[in-house]
Amino acid sequence: MIKIAFMGAGSTIFAKNVLGDVMLTPALRDSEIALYDIDYKRLKESEVILNSINKNSNSNRAKIIAYSDRKEALRGAKYVVNAIQVGGYEPCTVTDFEIAKKYGLRQTIGDTLGIGGIFRALRTIPVLLDFAKDMEEVCPDAWFLNYTNPMSILTGAMLRGTNIKTVGLCHSVQVCAEHLLKGLEMEGDNVQCKIAGINHMAWLLEVTRNGESLYPEIKKRALQRETPHGDMVRYEIMKQFGYYVTESSEHNAEYMPYFIKDKYPELIEKFNIPLDEYPRRCIAQIKAWEQMGKDLVSNKNVEHKRTTEYASYIMEAMETDIPYKIGGNVLNDGLITNLPKDAIVEVPCLVDRSGVTPCYVGELPPQLAALNRNSINSQLLTIEAAMTGKKEYIYHAALLDPHTSSELSIDDIISLCDDLIEAHGDWLPKFL
Image (cartoon, rainbow, N blue to C red; front, side):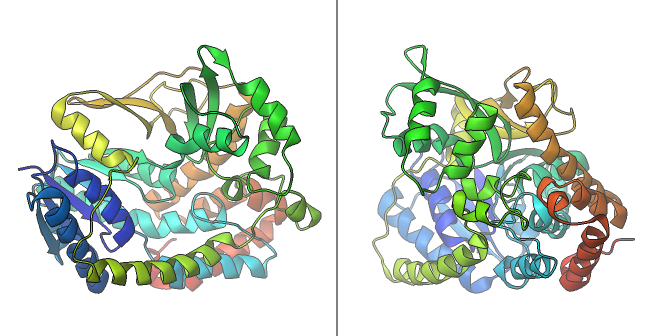
């Protein structure tokens, strides 16, 4: 029997999607599913909901067990899905946003890059390394499927600091072209895409139908689209740099130094940038999830339809040896030749019984590689800080972050980092 461990199973809706997919997949439906979370109440809610899906959609073929012991949850697992959030919305996300505001630094999402991304990584990496230590003891050959942000930094830390087979998975690659074409009222049928770069800043390098590029029509319609709308930052990036980027405008507004600027507050309205979007979203989602969780727990007839999340398709391909293509986050082992070899890149990967095999991409257009490198610098230095315990690397990561460095002085950036280290307290390891 295949064992699948889900770390962070209190993320009820996401656990429902991924593990519901597993139970609807013939090659996986007889699996043992181990649920683990430090929040016992939410863990048990997920267990109830998944047992309902197992009964109604899978004839009770899966074996679902909730664990309070992490090592036992991992023991013998063949696949480990990671969806944890260390520190949660409160206190840690609030801390990342509110202390940065005191310095005049505004953020939209703060989970991938920037001050928010750096400190989210610093509090998460030690937990993942503890997971890996347990895995090396009780399931050393398991695949670690990481969904937690900041994707590139965490995946890089796992691949650098452990022997665990790891791939990072995001939602944005699957929906990138579909979202773009839908927003421009273009047909999405029979479209072929090539996407590569880094997580949340990968590039739609090619989008074709019957061998003909759709980019000329895309760019024409993008210029004509009525404003305001939610994709304005990405359209501006495409206008200036030539290519559409995979992740949303609210994310990319804070990955670059051009959009959120105290000196030019009119840019916020011009590009329809939702400052403090993630805290607002967290409040709304927590409320919605609480109600949805209650509804699902009380509903004895929960069913499920398979989603587009990669996890079940990866496991299915490995179990059946029927190849499946994903956009995966992997070490840049010569895959994108004009990005650093120790970077984590998001590239097409083929999955089969042999594992995850990344595909060679070659050179990105130089302007796109340059934008990626700006982010990679901060990502690699954050990993360095986590691995060495040296505070100076936290400073370096923040000083080289594109948005932070465009807004604050050196002294203010260092002071901001010190304030965040103090405010997070025991959520962070000790740095010297």
